[in-house]
Image (tube, rainbow, N blue to C red; front, side):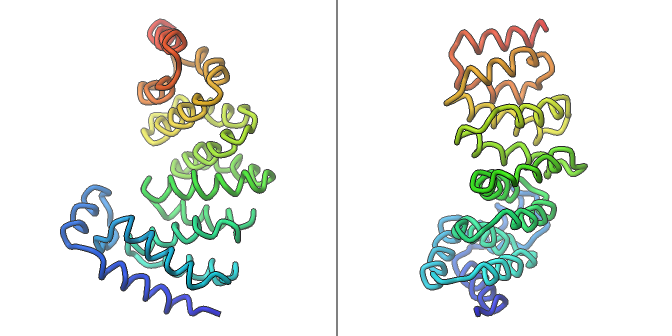
Length: 241
């Protein structure tokens, strides 16, 4: 059994050794973060996590979640990013019940820098592997916390890429389309944009009658990869709807 606190200390120390004060200050300002920043970049963090994974190929689910929980509890940006990277690296160990851990991390994130990976990469992968897990996303989609609502949207991106029906995402997005929160508006547009790469007709059918309700942020993202005729039809409907 690995010592979660001891391993977290080693990861924190490695991040501290690989960081610079200039990067720490810049990143803290960019993210408007209340956390401590050590100034280690993502390539360095990925290398630290991959080295750990290579040395602990037999890590158990209990050991993984204990380490993730320990790292996440530390008010240090790099420790929290390492926790997320560990979940990404060991997705094969995760099950439907781990969405509860992911949700708790989302609620404590307060920034897209953590939420987008937790929702789009980890929660999305879990929903693909465990389709019944979408029931939790239904709850997320109406949560008072807008980061949780954003996560419901982003977690649908991976299932949609795998051919999941559009109806569930459409229902979430329709209920949030009139929201003023930038991160909700951006997420709706982002998922529509990515879905349009493979399923443009479904995006057009959903968006065209709602174009006059969609924000400029949503529309700019959503129409980016549509053909010119569809893009013009949607933007015209937005102006004159």
